[in-house]
View 1 (cartoon, rainbow, N blue to C red):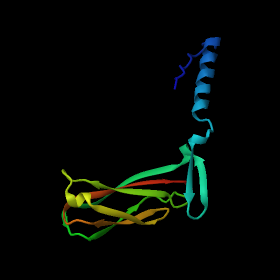
View 2 (cartoon, rainbow, N blue to C red):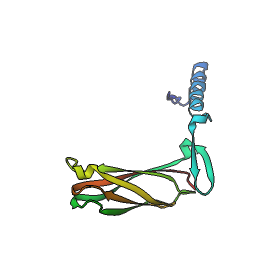
View 3 (cartoon, rainbow, N blue to C red):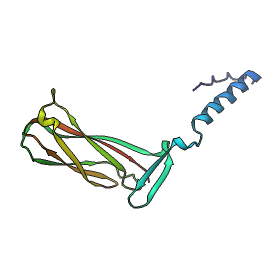
View 4 (tube, rainbow, N blue to C red):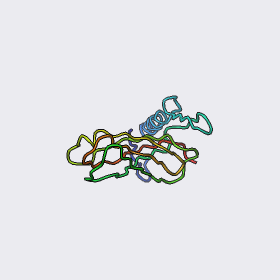
Length: 149
């Protein structure tokens, strides 16, 4: 976006400067226009679909370290929890993915299942199941998108 130069004290406002001001205001207006693609719609379990401006949505990205250079057995499960500030009006939409954090991913680190068990306005809980025995170093990336209070 264009940046408008500040006038000097006592500088007369001429047509050129007023034209620059109008151009910058129009550029700003175009960036914040209420078009459909600038809204976020979230389907909340308790209140159905809710829509807000994308700039007003709350997005949180988090990481939980699960195991670091540890040996796991097939069918072992490990629970995890991620706390965040409770400034959501409804439980947010949450996704989670496994991240191999070791230097080189092992077969055991590649064969993992993840399930979220609970999503509240301040916490996400889940469980990770190791399907293959071996040494692993893994964590969980968590993405939350919600409507603030």
